[in-house]
Image (cartoon, rainbow, N blue to C red; front, side):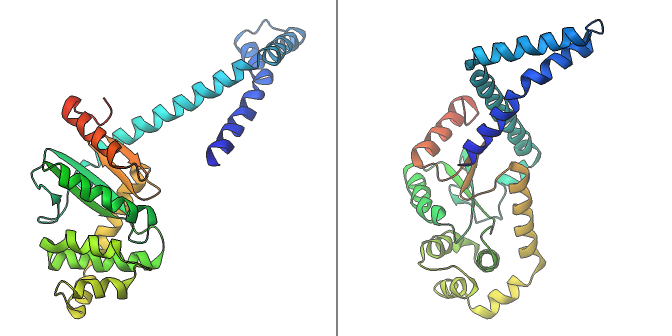
Length: 258
């Protein structure tokens, strides 16, 4: 739906081209008088009416240009924020900590698409022993998600070696993930509520969430899940086949999009 609105707005802008192009030309050629300018406007308008396919070509070209600019902007943002994107505390990288390709996933514990994508992560790690998988928590779905992330990051501080399993269990749990639910899951791994609450109060937890949210904004990530592989942002639950393709591309040409 958003795409259709964008196209409609673009189409409307191009329809005005007939009245804008000629004056612009007139400004560059000061010898055009008022009658000549009006004649040029009429010629341009008549041409566009007679050849409406030109408008569609212009729309497609504009959309392609905007898409290319967005990709270029994201690549720049990845380069500028590489340390924050690809880093994670020692012991908390899933898969192979020394893997040759790093997959970064931005997620929210209450995101239904993230829950569905959990199986993609596990299947990928099972199929490829040379993947390093980094999780970035961006609680975009409200206060309960923020609560769950605060518990999760506190758990990561206290028991980093079990962070991956904790993540899987909390993300796969039914119902809303909030502080109470996350603490209950942590208890299954032998971490008690008091220790968690003390860790949750540390400035590092709030700083981690703020940092990952800031990085997501810089990348133009506005939904979960979203992935970063090498130099490319892959928005949405793209599926394991697309993840595998991007990884193979990195190994082949050094970019997720060869």
